[in-house]
Image 1: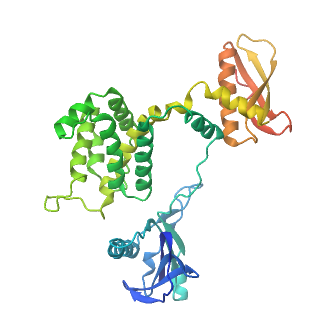
Image 2 (image 1 turned 30 degrees about the horizontal axis):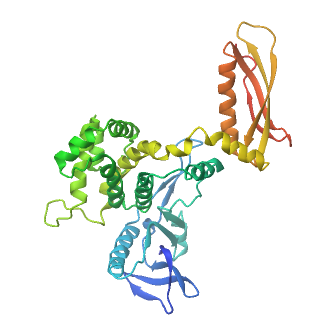
Length: 393
């Protein structure tokens, strides 16, 4: 079987000359558009078909087929490419997207073609879907920026962005370092020793609450090797014990003593995976304070007023039927909702559904909803519909 693996560069490199070369047991070629190289392709021949992912029929009707991946060649290649680039990265800022490798499998005989169930596969493909946001986040952020600015907001945001980027690239050790710098900046009280940090961290109720919430959200991935953090969280550690663990890991990952037992290594990132995730959730629960200026009460009416001035208002009409809980004939109701927008989105429809149901419950506590339909008033296009079975008591 022929196995081809494409390793992508994070940024294209201009290369004026290149040609195929035998290296790492494969034929290496460059994926290029003119002189701009975007990836490296490695072609292995004479490989067993067992390297290709297998497809197993579902055990029960309606379930998806099961894909099993057992490709030691891809694992070996990824490690060797990482080793090779470590020499180049000592000289140049060249980056490889190790979180994504595209693979192609092709039989060299008809029998091998029959044995290859999946001919294309992406290992750890990066999620490049765009972030979906409503416009009010931008307007609120810019309105908040008109006021005197405290640099602690930029410090929190900058370190959080660095940590997110590192985590996305599976650089979990770096992600943890950035997250811990946030904790150190805001909760250390200027202490740096282990004992001093323990005392400082446990003295901040907001940090202890964030740690407690993050622990409650933790779900261990049992398909992967256990980590020191996941082993700790399997029990019922207190927020103080978790803070102590973070401080101990700080000492481990901020200081690289190659002679100490169990010294960390940059090519062994998975051991910090759960640690990075835990810190990300702690900072998520802290983020409310550092985004709070956006959500000042005054910005809601101002955002609505600006939308009205620009003609960016959509009127939604909701017609509904309800019945009193003590019996009687069904009653009709109608309400109009003005919302700042230029088009109806699924997110808007979901929010309007939630708001309508909540308002109905609060305004009609002794009644039950039977049916509701929402349409855009101007065009008549449907937005959402709620219908409960007539036979419900």
